Each structure stands twice: as C-alpha cells, then as structure tokens.
Image (spheres, rainbow, N blue to C red):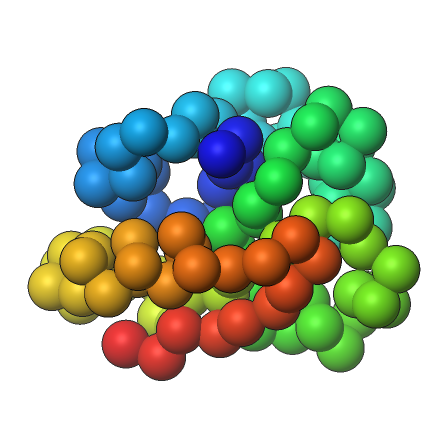
Length: 105
C-alpha cells in the first residue's frame, strides 16, 4: 500500500509498516499544502492511505468524495504511539479505500 504521512505524524512509525511504501508530505515537497490541496495531491499521486494527527480534518474537509483512506492518530506523542504500533498496523491493514478512522491512544 502507498502511504502518505502528514506533517505531524511521527516518522518512526514508518519502520513498523513493513510491506508498505511510506512517504512524508515533506519528502514529497508538499509541506506547505493545505489539507484539501494535500489530500487532492495525494490522491492524484496514487496514495491509498493518508496518516495524520489532525483531529479537525473531518470537520474541515468533505471526506465523502475522497478516494483515499484516512487514519487519524490521537495523540501525536511517539512514546505513546510506539506502545500501540501492532494495533495501529492491524487497523491500517484492515482499512478500506475511502474509509476514515480515528485511533485513540
């Protein structure tokens, strides 16, 4: 699966998503894009999953028309996220295209 990490997503998580191609918005040159433009660029580039820590995304964007799956990690703290990487990986692998989920940690 082709995965894009948003700016606030802890990059060390990528090591735990083996078997997937993970890129950050920064690496892609999209660090300055707003959420709507970022999601559109990701979809056009063939990304299937967008991982973010932006809890307001679903209120700011119309997600029903999106062709990308969105996972929101709550919170942004890598030490807390690290303890749940197996659960996060399972949730990501079970997601369907166009889905949306928030993972409380």
